[in-house]
Length: 495
Image (tube, rainbow, N blue to C red; front, top):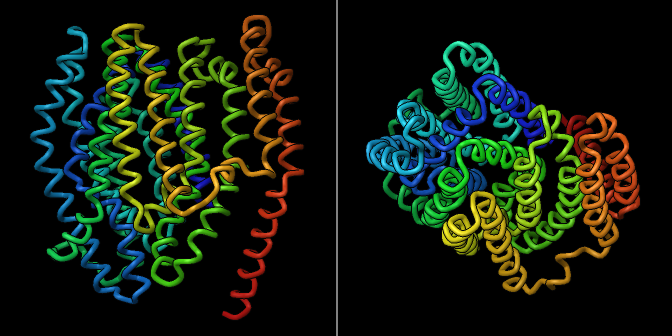
């Protein structure tokens, strides 16, 4: 519930922030910041997957009652990430500067190069923060992590309101560094409050724990390398073949879809420490948890993404201030890819919590390779928009690798990918969202966006809500929630 609340708040913050930036500095300037951040993300390659490894191993050693080892593990990860990513900053600056000179137009290049050091510093702080937040996740204190992220996002929004009108893009860079610095400090203090054996400043480094985390995290590292062929590559190719304004609208569309995806995926992400604990105590329960999680994610994700596609033209009018064809096109294409990707989340997180992580790596390699090759080819032949279509296709293929391999390895029927109880809901969402989208596009200039939303979206939402209400998954959800309340009340009485 806290994960869902986090993404609701972050979604609202990004809606307000991006609208503010678009009106204050313009699409082209906003595109510069987006491409600089994407280019600077090369420094993540020095992480060696340590941040992601912390979740699994903290949960593992907590389940064994080894709190001192947990403390050493977090310190080892923090020191390693701090040094490795810090060194990578120097190499990353040279590489990112070269990339920017290749893809950024000459009249915008100096501004991009001025922003680069702040982007690199912000990413370095974010990676280190990720270690401490992973420690919170490993303790299954997702509530604290979510509270910190919500507070940091609101703080960032306030900073942007204060400094961007005066300083422009540089103000955005200052706000980003201040936000990541405050989140780093708050995450460390929160983790130290939970794990009292942590020192004020990390100083213990253990080779055996480092090797154990790197051995597990090498798959994350390959995934990180392939992610360089993902969104950063897409933005670079869009800049080359479509221009900085197209990058800005892609950033807005992808961020919006990511927030909707986050509503579902974040709730599933809490499975990683739980699965690591189950793997130690009761391995047979893992498959039951997977099947329940998959049915739930189908029940939630299909209606959410269908509603997003149906509303995209109206969102464009409210968010951008006018109907923007590129934004609507990118939003629909990315949504179609991400709904497939979201359905693979249970298999992906089960792989993280158990021993199937190499299939996640294969999925990342497939996605990254296809995105780079097809994006370069389609962009050169058909222009910037084709780059986004290539990206969506690569995400769909890579996602299929994750879920199909999981079902085949565990002898789960492929027909179970379409739960029987949700067939009618899936069919209606597909056809209904398409019809609502077409009507919105046809009436977009003749009706006020609010009236358009009422006439087109409400009937679609009402019918979809009815089908969701009569779906058996609703009763299962109510049963889970009722049992949770009963257990909470019983625990309280015992205490």
